[in-house]
Amino acid sequence: MLVQNRMTRQPITVAPTTKVDEASALMKQNGIRRLPVLDNGKLVGIITDADLMRVSPSAATTLSKYEINSLLAKIAVRDVMQKSVISVNEGAPIEEAALLMSRNRISGLPVTSDVGTVVGVITETDIFDAFVDIMGLEEGKTRFTIEVENKVGVVSDIAGIFAEAGYNIDSFVTCRKAAGKYDIIVRGSFPEVEGLKAKLAEHGYNVTQAGRIGHA
Image 1 (cartoon, rainbow, N blue to C red):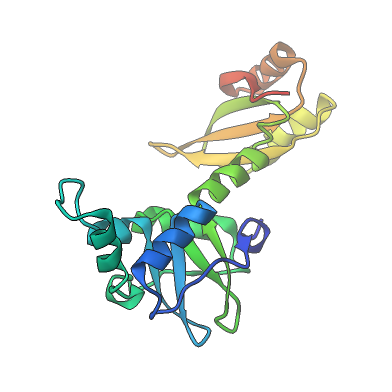
Image 2: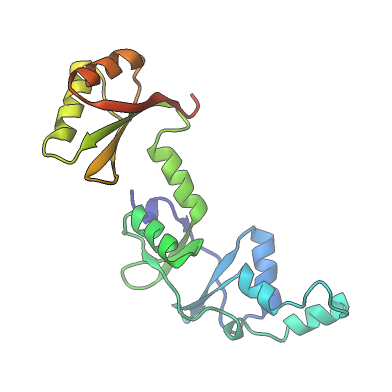
C-alpha cells in the first residue's frame, strides 16, 4: 500500500504572506490541524494548530476579542511557520510515512510528487485507518499468534499447515522478540480454531493466542 492510496488529495494550502487569523479560520472551517505553506508552488514550510496556539494570547489576557483578532491579522504565516519541513513522496510505502511520523513525533506529513509538487497530506488517522484495513478488523478475522525460533523454512512450514487444513491466509506478519525468537501472526477466516491449534502443536509450534479480532 502506497502513500498515494491513503493521503488526502488537493490539500488546502496557504502562502507565506497569509495572515495567521486567515490560517486559523481555514483550519477551523475544514476541521484540519496543519496547512502546507507554498511559495510559487514550492513547499517552504508548514503551519499547525500548535503554531497558532503559540502566538495567540493566553486565555488570561485582558485583550478584547477585537484586539486579539487585530493582533493576529498583523502576523504573517512566514513568521510562525516551521521552515524545516519533513515530507514524503506519494509513491512511498505507507510504512515509510508511519516511520517518519514516529521518529519525528509528528502527526502529519505533506505529500509531494516526483517533481516536488505538493499533491496531498497524510496524517496519523490515515495510518490508523490503513492498519485497520490491512488487518481486516472491520470484517472480523481469526488471529493466531505463534512463537517460533529464527530458522529457515518456518514461514513456509506454517503456511503449509494452514493450506493442508484447507484455509487461505489473509495476512501474515512476523514480529521480532528477544533471544532470537519471533511471533508469527496469521489472520484469516478460520472456523476450526482448536483443530488448527492441535495441528500446529503436532508440528512443534507454540500458539500463544488464538481467537477472533474485530467485528463482522
